[in-house]
Amino acid sequence: MKSQFYKIISLALITVLAITGLSVYANEAETEDLSDFLIIVNTTDEEIMLKCVQGCAWKKLRFSSSLGNSYQAVDQYGMTNEAGKVFKEKSDQLEFMFKIRKTENGVSFKGKKGTAWKALSFSCLASCDQAVNQYGMTHLDSN
Image (cartoon, rainbow, N blue to C red; front, side, top):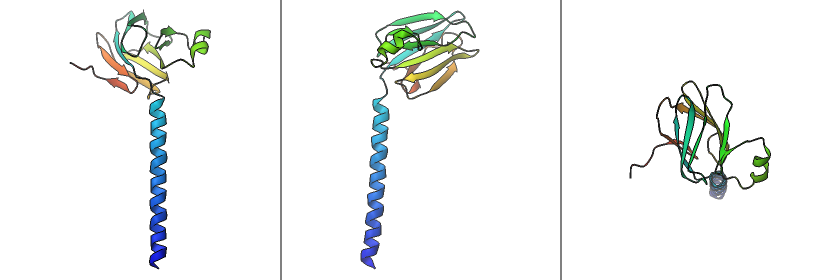
């Protein structure tokens, strides 16, 4: 009776450890796919301004942001066209890519590569200086 009890406990313990190990492995794989970047977003009535603090080959980007415009694709190299030849040629080199556009209340993002988020939006009506990284909205260090 005791040996059967120990077998059941051992089997349960092995199962728990196996599931835990697989879940840790899956989380590590997801984290490895994320890119390390930090971008400050600001808007005016006419444009969206992005300032890269970390993880980009560019420092500042500005583009027209008329309400109703289609999304603008951005990667670590700058503005791009997701469906175009440029994206296909360098897709294996891309660290991150997202699309951004102005909405009535702020901005809307779609994460395409290197982000933990698939969609992200926030209010940014005038001079918001909102920081965004691979995990979503964040705050700037005051150091």
